[in-house]
Length: 135
Image 1 (cartoon, rainbow, N blue to C red):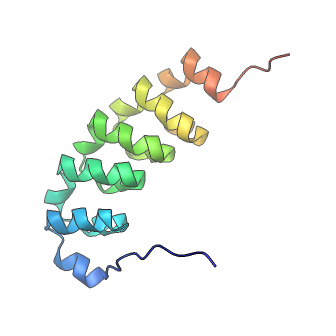
Image 2: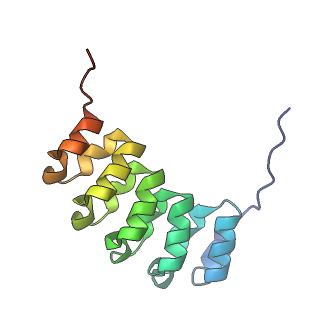
């Protein structure tokens, strides 16, 4: 029988009470409960340090990040590196950034649908998405 790592259980009520408590949210991340950030205050969702730590653990958190952080290359790159499809929630500007586009499609080729047209037509991106057969 496999041993399960004991995770601290977080209750929604407690998370809601701590919506503006950065230390609480950081602890939730450490404890494997990144979902807690879905309840974070707008102020915390604008906190680059917190959001960067969160998207490194779970790229899905980009969905909750402030508009400004969805246009921050460092934050978006960290998010798409572990969850390519979250590119959907990056700013239009960053959906056209080649480094971010490459990271997203390397993680999940389905992220192609969220690339800008210019990036979809990029030769390097196309070689990853549609590798030529070596015959």
